[in-house]
Image (cartoon, rainbow, N blue to C red):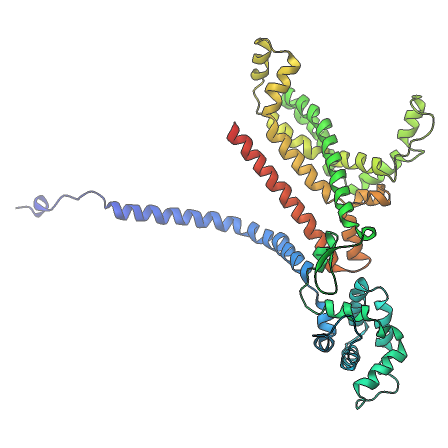
Length: 422
């Protein structure tokens, strides 16, 4: 008999083998997709997450005193702040200052202590330049070194400078973050509010939120009707007009701010136009005040409000509004009751985007505003470029970051609540 006639028929495919092949194919597809996004993830890690981590770390890091005066910090352990330290502390600080590599290290130490005790900068630099102390040798006793330091500068007998050293002896400190919210630690380490005349950052933060809220409101009032008008036009016309909306994106912020300086000055085009129209008798003060700051920021940030609104409005069927009117609703009531609620996602996204961008603005208030119009980012730049206090600059940056995250969390919570109600 033919063997081919007696051979068993091929059975059905093994389901387990097929399932394994499908799983392997799915894993390969996911790995290919991940490999395509890996460069972007690495870019975000290196340019976004790592700098934020470094900022948060520097906001609580306090290395100047711990690195420059290790012996002095040890000598001050157990010291009572009300009394002048023992001679061993004087000997330790003379040895620590004498062991600094160069004046740059002494300058960093002096700046840090001066922020705690005014006058410490000149005290530290004078002592550093005078070392080794006159009349002392390697065999001098701590009492001799104490006498030499007091003879060099009597301020070494004041406890406030020693308190500043002892307070900042730890490498990690909450002082920068506390100062950013108008708090401080006293000599015993208890947290307290600073004196009323020194409470500046709370007012600066409120001013930042106030200016950002006003800019966001004006962007919404100006951007909503413009976005609605664009959404009612044919696609070709809307695209052409959208180019005019996007023109600010193609121009440098500095160029736009300089243009507003020309327009808003007392002899500028705006005041001349208002006088020629007989609307005012004398030029208005539109520059170097809050008005100029808000006008320029609204102009720069308006596209960030229009684009989210336009994208949402184009998805709203126009038949809804016509149906409400045909059922007897007045056009204005139908617009606010039927159309506007459907654009809430665009309003929320645009307002959040504009507000978050506003609270971090620096160039526009610095060039167009007065002393009372500067926002929190201005002081971050001051601490970075002028006073070279990186800890305080990073603490204020962390405060802005926290405010941004809180606002985003509130936005997400509100949108989720609206979706659940809907």
